[in-house]
Image (tube, rainbow, N blue to C red; front, top):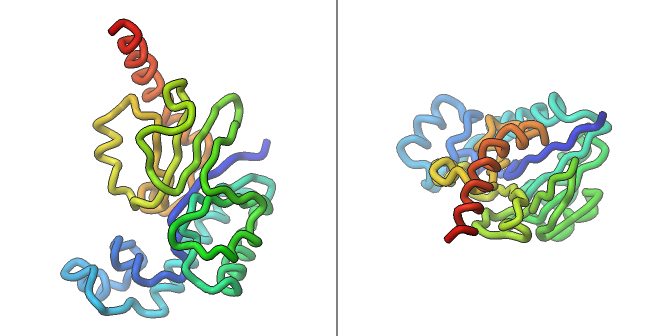
Length: 207
């Protein structure tokens, strides 16, 4: 059966994000430099950018089948449309949908099967609100819908962990070992949170 997958914040071709987030694709020398000054004016090498891009695309192709569906929740690339198309063409999955991010060019829309600013999808009885940006309230949130987001490069994971009834998940690569996340993995993440959510909602009804 075809599977549903999610990812975000690939930033293909974007050298600065590799050093800003200290992604593991830096050379040893660059890694040391980023540890000292990740926001400095220095640039990572072209070889590092290529290594980064190859690793992220390979991770998608290793997990996502040709007949599956992949949602990319923004920040696909910063490259001109011709280079962005070359990245898209390297992804084997035939159906790739897209939620616009703050770094994406409007011209990227032609590369994807479905394009949203944000919106609700339904899969196996679950309602899932997709947005590039993290939200703390979203459509049908009080009725148990889920929210998947990117943009923050894992910086809200501790906050999410401290709020176990929040039905939200960062599906960006920095928060998920630089790999896409399957629907089944989202289910495994959300199930204990759903129990906490419904218990919390019951207390709200009694207050």
